[in-house]
Image (cartoon, rainbow, N blue to C red; front, top):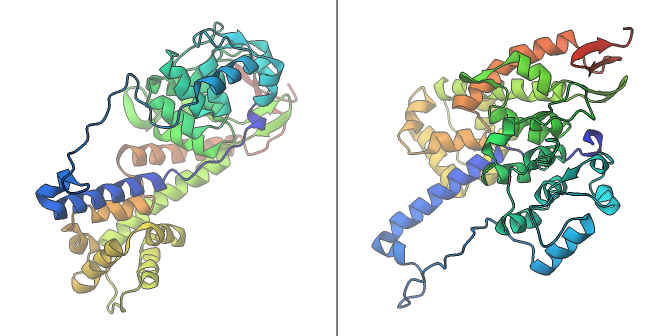
Length: 375
């Protein structure tokens, strides 16, 4: 299952910046519109009220006819969206796994595995549960979405009643005698899903949010083996991402507290990008800001830097509402609890890789204990 799904999704760091930018722009538009901002539209036309629906959707929903066809093809009862069934052979092929032949599951769980959000929305509108669990407790929606590398579905489930399931564990004894797989472990080679679950705190101590539990880390992001052959090992890529994220934050703080250049050239996006890349120690993150920030925001940042003859950007930019946060978002700088999680993960994960190097042959998990090929 895990080797069959290696889905990469968009970078997590881009979304917060765009959201902050959109909110800033909307605030500026409303402010400039004055009292009329609340009455935008064609002059003389009354403001239309939104129609209320029984179920709120955040995207397109599959139409009734197509939804019923998909249910029947997968082996489900189209008249009962809450009934779990054994999947049809065609559904197993679509899911790209023979594992589903061994157990029943609910419709919503299967379509989460496929990443079919239109069907997921349809099923919830008909009364399905986003936390539905199979009889043997192996399958539930968040687990199957993670197993399929469906980050968009994981996020959708998180916002639709399955928030607590990010740390929930299955009792899957077919793939591991140790059993009890978590969505993070099921996410496997999907780096985007793994990062999202980590930042949601699934590795943190229960009594200390933001502090990684080394034991939980070793259990959930360990290398996966099929007998003696390695399937995948997410640890090296995760460690590189964690270290880079912490380094970026350090670079950003250096930028805020550092010294401005003696001479500032004429404004241009290229000049602003060069300055930010030097301060952030990342050409790529500077490009992200320059590519996405509107001209007005770029000029505002440049004006504050060039006109204020002070030694600290945190002073010259601090008086502009949201500008530091905006730059941090575009630069992919983690803050608060996210940063604490990443910092506390560096040490344990580095040590884990030293003890069990990447691709070490004959190492795996069986029967609840670690073993080597010579045992």
